[in-house]
Length: 172
Image (cartoon, rainbow, N blue to C red; front, side):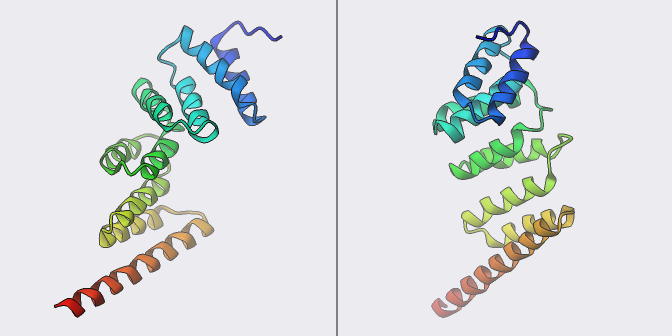
């Protein structure tokens, strides 16, 4: 059995265990870190990730995502996963509030933030607003495939707007 003495050692080992897909052991180490440092954002993020994707406990995942942002608002890794989570569970008001904070954090991709916001608007049927977000994301995109995907998103949503306009015309 390995004995880790410092919080840093536990975090590094937990991160290695995550990469090795040994999530339960990583979870245990993250919990040990939180016993010593309850405000450790990286440990909260690690637990949130495991709870969301491996153990499918969204309630606990959300709590730990929230703690990670609360205890270290500059910890960029939390924002993409937390935004995707909020999109998945249809918590749009919280998503847009978090997106605004995320855009001010160095290391958070504005392309990802605007894309998730576009997805949220599209899911709500606010197609014109979705297009605005997708265009913002496309302006920031530097990857060819990412840019191409955003152009496809814009095209798809424009088609939805056209269909919506056609339906409105029929009923007028």
